[in-house]
Amino acid sequence: MPVHGSGTDRRVPTKAAGVLLAALSLSLASLTVFTPATAAADSPERGSAYMGMGVLSHDGEGQAAAEPRGIQIARTEGVDVSSHQGNVNWRSLWNSGVKWAYVKATEGTSYRNGNFTQQYNGSYNTGMIRGSYHFATPDTTTGRAQANYFVDHGGGWSKDGKTLPGVLDIEWNPYGASCYGKSDAQMVSWIRDFVNTYRSRTGRDPVIYTATSWWKDCTGNSSAFSKVNPLWVARYSGSIGELPKGWDFHTIWQYTSTGKTVGDHNHFNGALSRVKALANG
Image (tube, rainbow, N blue to C red; front, side, top):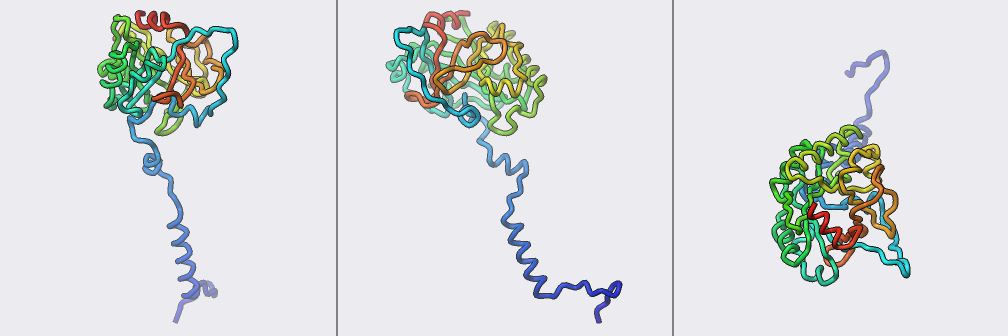
């Protein structure tokens, strides 16, 4: 005989309980539980990041503007490449008017571009002035550690007239939080650690590649590097738009991700003689 509490029968009829449990099981089975593990599963593979990876998704793409008639704008076409492009047809790019290139060398302190030799030496052998870049991951190791890793694995500089100073590619985090979990002050400190270390190792101030919107969000629109570090700004539109605070002009503008042969194309702000001047220091 069943025992009743407080004089009230709280039992659920057996058939109804079975239906309820079955429905609950189906509901739980259909749920996606978001954990660090599932977030990691949705992220790209470490090392696969490249310049401008987040530009389209965050800033979009505007329409290309027509060249002003009767006005000559001094600029020099260049490209940036990574393992994303594989072996590059440098002769085709040279014939199309590309005169300089930047090649991804490293990311964090554990990734090296497997296509670096073909891309870095291939551009040089075609006649281009070339340099290398580092994709920063400020949430993994210090700026100093990453600058040293970069210099040790393709990011060095020599005054041969054909080697551009290294680039710090600092932009949206493709693997997690856009600002890598850092405050504005922490991010500025990380960047300073990188650029100071790079300068002490090579004697050159690295170029900083970024997008104005990211710079505003993640450094508080800091002007700390504007007097020393050349600016390479990403904006896929017919005009370059607003620059990060403190920079009165840009050195390089990444203006599209859909250019000839490799996708990413850039305008150097000046004639080829200015590209050579940057290479020579």
